[in-house]
Image 1 (cartoon, rainbow, N blue to C red):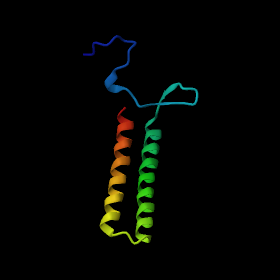
Image 2 (cartoon, helix red, strand yellow; image 1 turned 60 degrees about the horizontal axis):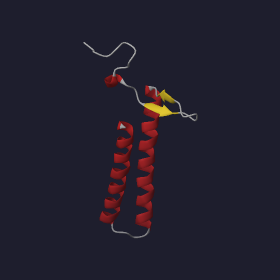
Image 3 (cartoon, one colour; image 1 turned 90 degrees about the vertical axis):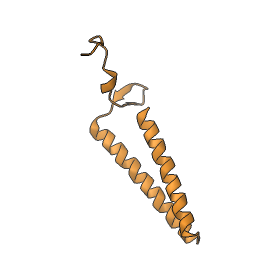
Image 4 (cartoon, one colour; image 1 turned 45 degrees about the horizontal axis):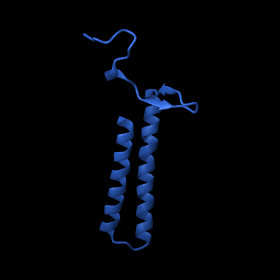
Length: 86
């Protein structure tokens, strides 16, 4: 089945890790991971809402406002996925 020695973890089953204040690595539980993802998602939505409100209050055209919000959301979401996969 698995050709790894018994004391080495299977890389396919590795759990996401995070550094604590002392620089040690620790595994994140599913609950912690879900909270981090939901918080980040809420932050991206909040930032998009704030940008939309700002641009509309400055009488910027609707299509430009939508384009800017979509680009910012795409960039932030891409960064989130890149961090998560590393």
